Length: 341
Image (cartoon, rainbow, N blue to C red; front, side, top):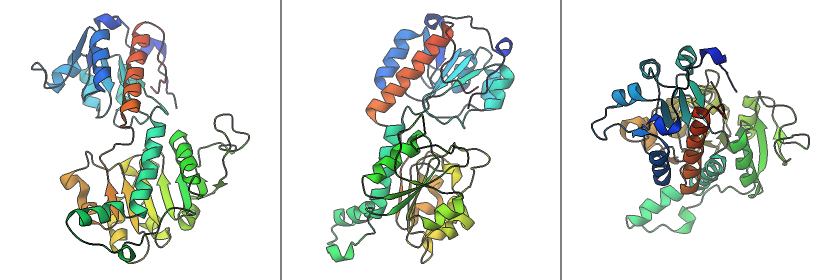
């Protein structure tokens, strides 16, 4: 969704790319780092050459964000900041209200990492359903595990419920179809023709559109979340929703951690019956390590990764390079592609 500011409220473009100071809070792909150094007048990174995060923000004309937040205080203190280019789809960690108030443009990369995130969605489902991360550490520790003691639910022929119907959801559904899965989909915001023969965006695939989240949860062996984090989707999977899931069901989340009530999920996993496992690439508090894992660290049949969905070599470079290109075009007076604010 685009939330354009009137042109007269945007900060004036008073630098060329070759003159611009660019703030990069976390490393880009190494080749993209080299491209940024070559393209822009000055590239600032916290902790490098004595620059603090606060000083970088105050000096920046541009922020290139791969991961990490830009809160309201950051944006209001960034007097020169004209554009925040996000390498990725989600921009919930950027205070868009502050950007609107101060005339800062925000862009993203919708679908740029969709194939990589879909791959990881399938990988997490297989890792949980085939007990990969349960069995391998035990073998590595010297335990002998007879195959009859390593039985697992498997994926083939299961019913997979997809929540959301965007790029990543679509590619994930296609991968699950290769395992002869039945696909259910729920998305109150998607048009009626989505994923059908009448859809101008996606080729038709075999699936069943479900009218309510509760119905999808009660019918699915695997539930896979593919929604942006908004006030409506925050904690959309809580104790009541988990209780509606089938016995032996698995929850996969490669979208945003705040969509799942993690305490409720830990409770559900520790009970007999109901939800059997979970594969999570995102957590409510990131990065995913130590205390941020909460009780899920020791919960049964759980695989947790530190938000790696888009982190393949090719996808990361492609996204970083594209974000640099968006900034170059914007500072060159060509407008902002993929603008969300």
